[in-house]
Image (cartoon, rainbow, N blue to C red; front, side):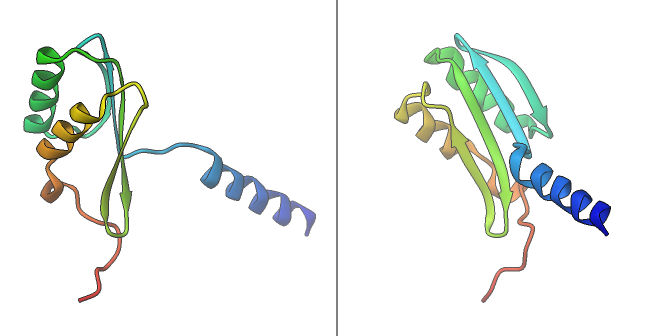
Length: 102
């Protein structure tokens, strides 16, 4: 019985503690350094173009929620660049995990 409780505690800790974005982009000095996840081609090209025109460093993460995709940015990315990246994000390409209420 104790092993079941221990296994459940480990499972809950793993689900809560680890960061699991659907998409992660890491920029360094105006270049796309790393990408993790399925990056839509047009979105990747647009992000590279934004970074080339106005160099910045930071991380962009996309999480899937019930209502759709949620984007988070590191604090080192200026707000104007965050808005430009939000504007080119393909919301139709990322489907929500849950059902939407009408």
